[in-house]
Picture 1 (tube, one colour):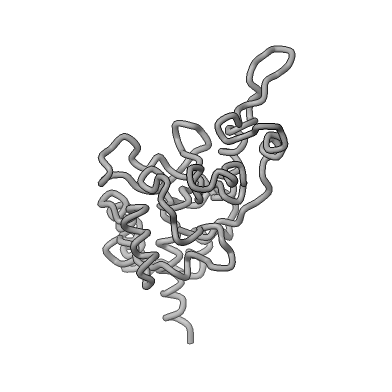
Picture 2 (cartoon, helix red, strand yellow):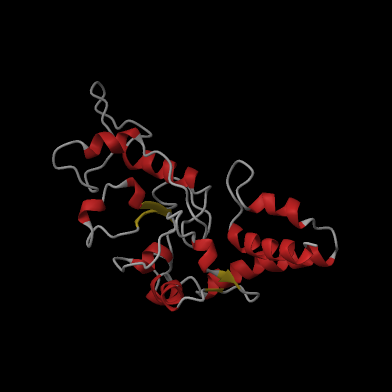
Length: 222
């Protein structure tokens, strides 16, 4: 996970929220008055595009790749629609998440699909409390926190230590260690590929590498 800097909401979301009886369910594509057809890049289409762009193409929780299509991602309400209906159209409450094993047994689900209406004790879009400072990535591919509440959320609410995610993170880290063993890795230069300094989508599981590269840079400091 990495802290997400929320940008401006899509103008169609602002417009929709100002309509009487607006809610998340009736936030749909606008209709062309002349043709009666849906207007592309409006409604939830526009919302998905905005979320994926500001998250640099990664799921807000596990950092798997997401794409701005209904069958490639979910729109996550950090505070659920059930528990916080007044926030269902609040852009600061909306995030882009992967499909999270939807349709699979609960033990194999993760991210928003596993979370459901559960309350999450931290926000990944709170710049005052960067989530990067509260988690660590271990050499076996697992993710952990020194705080009991956050550690419980990682495992019980989001299931971010599901075997598939652990395996994927470990694969990224193992590839890094192989390059390190060949002695052809400049940590400072490498960090820029993963920390968002460069434009475009981030690599999957980018924060794993940011965590380890920052540790290496500190060890190399005089």
